[in-house]
Length: 162
Image (cartoon, rainbow, N blue to C red):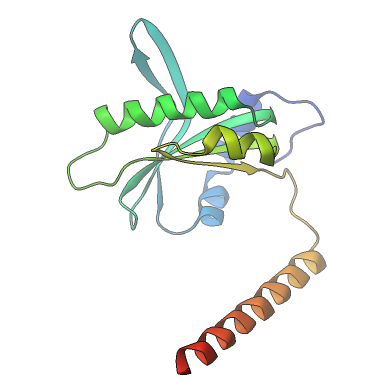
């Protein structure tokens, strides 16, 4: 995305917007871009959602929050606030509850486990990469995933027969 060693969340967001077509294609065909820096007011406080998408097949809003550092419990609370607000004010009849995606530069599995456990909202925390792995590495990972799927599928077919 052309980012240097040090960058802000705003610069990361700007780079994503400039690469929006590629970013959306990475997410899948069913994502529609709705807004960036979507403002919402809770009580007398103003907040901004970094990116707002809609997933057509899932019929749900996808709220994306960009974080430069490690995932923290505060990130989970902030996303939970966004999701509750979106469910109450932005979700139309017939749509599913919104989903939150926190993209952070470093994952913290233990904190994510406890901060996101037992939430009624769906919040995912994922680590983002500024550069894709090499073509050879991607090919190896695809081959490994295919082997795992074939093995899993073969096991399922075998167990279904018994």
